[in-house]
Length: 238
Image (cartoon, rainbow, N blue to C red):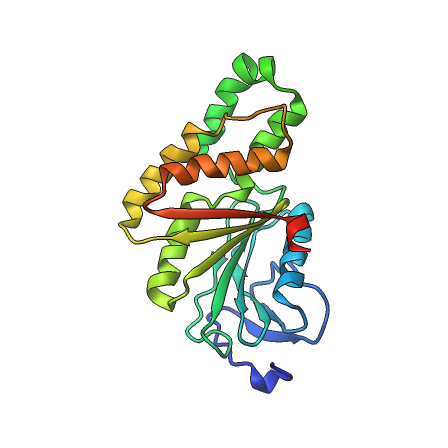
């Protein structure tokens, strides 16, 4: 367990590192500072991220060192549409790392192609079968999945930093993503088709959590050779 700033070794290419002695995780848009928090367990940190995803207007990225139970905030150039992960030449002491990416409720996650599909179908089809709340849930359900750019970022972390665990923090829970071997450009192309094929598959007779699970199950079935996605709802983390 780390006890002081002398025990932390973080070499960031962006800003200086500030050790938070206690408290919750934050969404930080000041690229001159990177925050490290060693006062939370992994479960506490994940619940923090879910709360941030319910209110934040910016994406964020974190690394969690499982050996020392430390979260390091590494996002920079973060907006309501994207966030870059800081390129760490040496992460927190220890190599047992998980990459977390925050998909907040108010972010502009949908790719342009999916946005166009929603606009095309909104008045002609969706409103005939779904309430406005259901349509909103259908859109926000996308926040539980990685974007195409996320998959490319995860592959870079695998190859350059030997990080193999990836999680998406969203307003509804935590999504674990296992990215298997294969050409990433080909995987992204197949993934784009999978999420588009099932984007309008929504059952208004079941709750949002089950709709999320059904959507992920469908995407998993299409991508079983390349991806394994698991959703954990907020209530199951507590």
